[in-house]
Image 1 (cartoon, rainbow, N blue to C red):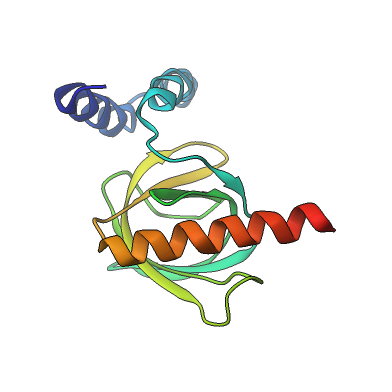
Image 2: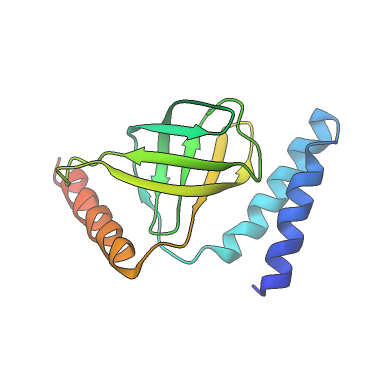
Length: 141
């Protein structure tokens, strides 16, 4: 998907917040389908508690899946599309929590999608490695 198309999808997502709930849900579902085309990394199941914070507050959420580019967090409260957030993820395959920052790019009745900010190549490689090890551990159970 082209950068302009991604930008348009982000604008549509933000405008959806102004619609009545039933229409908002329909539009979010449609946009979610479009977003499938812009994922740049494979997602792995990740059902762990994580810490999430922004300028307006902080809390905990359960992640549903994670990739080297983002994470989906179930039912995470008052965060909105466009919010800048800080995350702390823990993995059974890594000794230390991974601290990342990102932007909320999707909000649905199930939770929020966070796209990680640009990170160094070493952090991306580290996250890819952690995710792969995490997936192997989960498969062996």
